[in-house]
Image 1 (cartoon, rainbow, N blue to C red):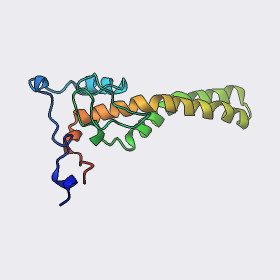
Image 2 (image 1 turned 30 degrees about the horizontal axis):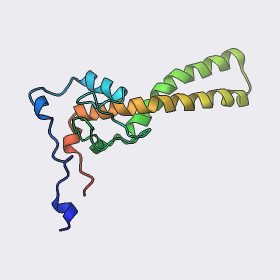
Image 3 (image 1 turned 135 degrees about the horizontal axis):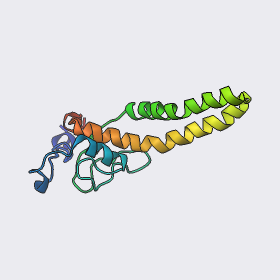
Length: 146
């Protein structure tokens, strides 16, 4: 065995901080709300993201293993669902009332849809990370060690 496999990752052995062991996990809405605001779902102080969508390996305050949570396809799905429900009715109303040329529709609606998706994707991914953490998926997630 090599040295990497002999050592256990500190994230793999995470447990809540000593002062927090007496309290239980925050409520479901609290953890999702913290994720929406780019805060650690557990402590509410550390950040979830180190970049636009890159989840930090662990919370800088409580060491919660956020990097073990892989949201995968859920955030884009929820983003398209939400933004689509906001934009598509406007597209249909404008089409029915004014019947603008298709090129004008594309010039207006595609950039609007893209910008809204970019703005909403990060908070939704944070909420999904909070949701997954509340469901206990950080404890069951495989480590990146192998």
